[in-house]
Image 1 (cartoon, one colour):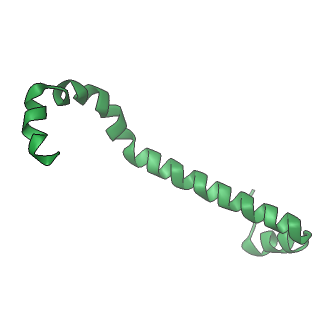
Image 2: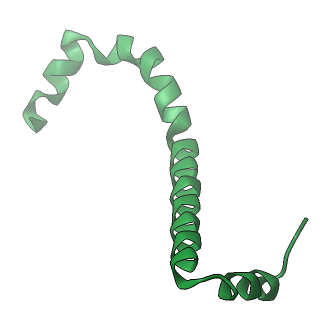
Length: 70
């Protein structure tokens, strides 16, 4: 079920002001959730490969190669 912006605005406008603030807070919560999911999805492949690459990363040769950057 899809509602137009006008329908949603009309319903929110009919609410008492404290309830409008609650709706606004909920919208911000949903936006943050969507942003978190997008970020998680973006870095998911990196996180999934971390364990597989750890065997290569956790070697003395790697520590030596990167020691000048510490």
